[in-house]
Structure formats: C-alpha cells, structure tokens
Image (cartoon, rainbow, N blue to C red; front, side, top):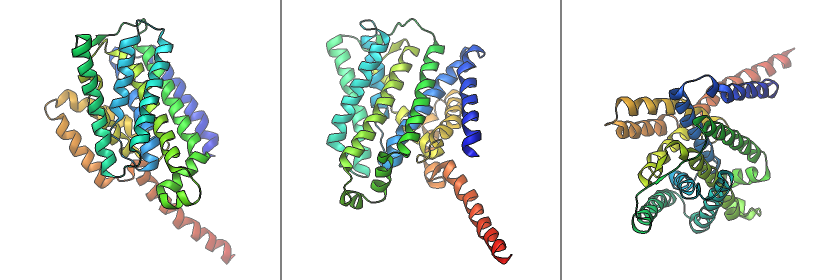
Length: 317
C-alpha cells in the first residue's frame, strides 16, 4: 500500500515543484533555489556520514570548488562541459582526501574535514590575490534563476534515487555491517577502505555540482561567499534534525530549518551564529535520531504493542 500510494504522490509533488517557477515571484523563487540546494546537500551529506558515522564538515570545500570551477571556466567552455569538469575535480579531491584520511575516526576526522574546508579557502584566496590579482570573479551565463532551480531539483531527485538504490544494493549492506562493527566487516571479506571511499566520492561529487549549479545566482563569486563555513554547519544540522540514516530524513529536516534560518538571518543578523549553535545543541541532545527516528520510535512501539494483542486474540479463537 505504501508503495502504491507513495510513488504517485511523489510524482505529483515533483510536477508541482517543477511548475512552481511559472507561478511564483522572484522572492519565492529565490527561496526555492536555496531550499532545493540544501535538500540536495543534506541528502548528499547523509549518503556518506549518515551511513558510516563519519561526521564531515568538508561540505563547503566541495561546494566552493564547484562554484569556483564555473567562475573560472564559464567563459572558456560550454556550460555542460564546465559541470563535468567541476564534477571531475570534486571527484579527484574526494579520492585524494579519502585515501589519506578515512582511516581517521571520531573527532580526528571531524577536525580534519573542517581543516580541509579552510585549507581550500585559503589556497583559492592566495591564488586569486597573488596570481590572478583580484579577490573574486564575475559569472555571466545566459539563463535565469528558474533554470538554476530546475537543475537543482533534478539533482535532488537523482540524489534521493541514488540514496534509495544504495540502501538496497550490496554496497548498502556492506555499509550496514561496517557501521555495526568494522572488525566483523573485515573478517567477512568486506573491503572497508574501498567502500568508504566510494561513498565519500559520490557524496562529494553531488556537493560539488550543487555549488557549480548555484554559482551563477551570485554573479560575483569570492572565497568569503562560496567557502562560508556556515554551509557545512547548516547542512549537518538539517541532516541530523530530519534523521541522517533515513531516505527522506535529510530532506524533511532541510525544509523547515532552511525557512527558519532565513527568518533568523533576516530578523536577528547579529545573533544568527549564536542561535545556530544553540539549535545544533538542542537537536543533538533532544533528537539524536532525528524527527523521522522519533516518529518511528513512537508509532513503531504502538504497532509492536498491537500486533501481539492481535496474535493473542487469534490464538484464543
């Protein structure tokens, strides 16, 4: 029944979202662009971190790489080719970082991932000021905000489908074993390093494409804009709030939190970072498995209580 009604409902929602730019104004279209971007980022983050337990703060590193690739190459190459180049660069960086660091665990990986984002930002800043002679670049592409939105919406759909497929593939089964016990996983023949690197690379490529697709929205790009660490923290909070281990969890967490963040940044610009930190602490303590996990815990317990009672009635008859 869930599958019967779920697919038509999802397709109907997708059609409505795809047609939204035809009926909404510039302000709401801007909100839809930001929302689609963060839904994709949160889902991509959960694709790796939600399944392995490796908390990554490197989201903005790949996001910024994608944005700057478009800024540098948009006048020299066709736009589709630029996206492919951006994805290739993100893939290369992810493989290099994965091979070097995915043996780290716990807080060490968190610190390294945050340091990676800062390192990339500083390298781009040094190159722009010392080699290029300017701090930022202009992006002039011949399409409007609705085209950016449609690209991000398509990427979000691909990310969700990919998450669904991985969850039902051998790779997903291997990840479940690794998350439970890496020692057991290695003893039964699972290549732990290859599995982690593969998923980290897929997640990184999606994040890179989000930055590449969104970059024309700003027209002018500089390191402070596209390498803002707030992107990493917001992505993390959204994924955790919804439930990083569930298919729809990150998307469901991104929608209300993005709207809340927009309201907070507009009404409390001087206290925005403090409120963001407080919200993160609240989510970690009160919703460790996210809203979807809390919903499953409550209603799953009720179903478990009803089923034995039904079984008992059947036995009595």
